[in-house]
Every structure is written in C-alpha cells, then in structure tokens.
Length: 330
Image (cartoon, rainbow, N blue to C red; front, side):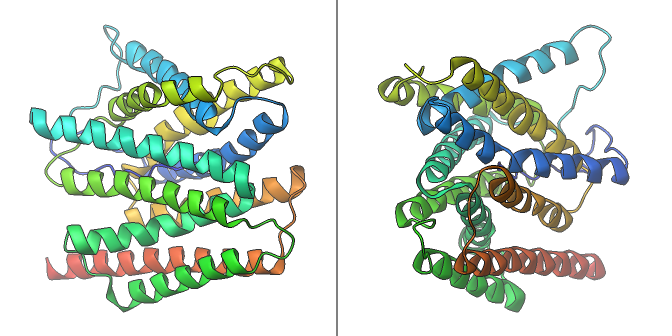
C-alpha cells in the first residue's frame, strides 16, 4: 500500500544517476504488486487474532524503520556506494516541514487504510483509497499550487465521484460499508497530503528518499505508540507465531522493500507512467482478496472499481499531455 507516492526528481544537478528505464519499470511493477499485498496481510493478521489497525500501523512503521536504518547504516559504511546527494542543502525550516508533514500524512494514511480494511474489506478499501487519492491530489494541486486540471482532469474527477457513489450506495450484501469507505477516504487524504507536500517543497531540490521515508516511519511510530498501547500493542490470544510472521512480512515487503523500489523506479520514469504502473496495486489487492480471502465482489463493486480506475487513468493521461505540452513550449 501507498502507497505513498512521493515524486523524486530525476535530473537534479549533483543527484545520483537514475537507473535504466527498463530496470526502473521492473522496480515499480514489483513495488505495486507488493503494496497490493499489504491489505491482504492485514486481513490475515486480524483473522489470526493479531493487533488492531492502530497497533498494526505502529508495528509496520517500527519494523520498516528498523529495516531502513539497517540499509542506511550499510550504505554509509566506508567504501559503500549508493549515497544520494541532494541538489542543494535544505533550509532547516523546509526540512522540518517536509519531515513532519510527511510523517503525519503517513500516520493518517496507514492507520486509516488498515481500519478501512477491517471495516469494509480489502478490495473496497484499497480501490477507494487509491482511486480517491489522485482526485484529491489534483484538486489540491489546483487550489494550492495553481495547477490546472483541464478537460480530461475534470472528466476524471467526475468519474471518480461516480465510482465512489456506486460503491457507497450499491452494496448488496454488506460488503461495502459506509464507515469503511469514509476511513478509506481519510487514508486517501493522508496520501494526498504527502504528495502535495513533496510537490510543493521538492521543486527546487530533492531529498534522499530512503532518509525521508525512515524519518516518516519514526514520526509515525512515535505518534501511533500511545494509540497502539490503548488499543492493545500485543494480542492476548490467537496464533502468536502466525501473527509474528505476518507482521514481519508487512514491515519487510510492502513497507521497507516496496518504498525503496518505488523511489528507485520513480527517479527515472515520468510521473504519469508511474501512476499507471501503480494501478497494479489495487488490481493485485482485488485479485488476492477474491482468490485467497473469500471476498465477493458485487456488480456494484465491480462497476465502482472500473469507474475509479478509469478516473486514475484519465488523470494520468491528462498529466502526460501536460508534460508533452511543456516540452513543446521549451
């Protein structure tokens, strides 16, 4: 899961060279597939009597932080390669805003997403979160950054709203639950906030994505710890060994590994292409939910899913056209 789509500049002076396009696409594909399994793992944790959504989010942040700290330690060893240099030093205020804003957004995003999975199921929670996220990003970019949607963007927003309406009002057997949809929208808002912060502050220079992600996980773990303690940090019953294995998987694969692969791929691939490739996440999540978790997709859910995915694709096409227009003006 966002999931968190933070764009990484690929042509900054002094930045580390971007990897080849083919390898970058492979990294994005693997990251999307891995993120699509996060919700499934969360569902299995809940079914095994594991911690609740807030505690699961804490363990995800804490585990991902430990793994990324290990990566940073290995990367900074004498003679080790892979150190990423930023284009110019950040001011203390900008760095603080980036770290705190990204950490808070990540906390809201992950916690609300796992709560949505618990409330309304994996497929619906994932599709609503990832479908609404780009729409909120487009609206926020227009209001805060002055970026125009264009006709294609407006059509995509309308399609996404229609998809959400169908999902919320069209549940036939209780699979779609309004509280879960609202939690998924809250998760999408956290995801959008992270992306808007990155766009607003990243225009004049880039930051090391691994370091930024590690700081975000640290803030998320600190913010979530008291809530996780109140909810129950460790389950009192259930299958402890299975829960431990699943928690390790969540921290390692759809968190630490997927974030690193995403940032590596995003360094060399246009944002519009990245958005399209990352549609593998809700698709893989829906496949896992129906094939392995016994979830049933109703006709309304399928229709809402198609409308939401169409909206995301429409926004990606609009962004691609804007990039081409900008190149022609140059």
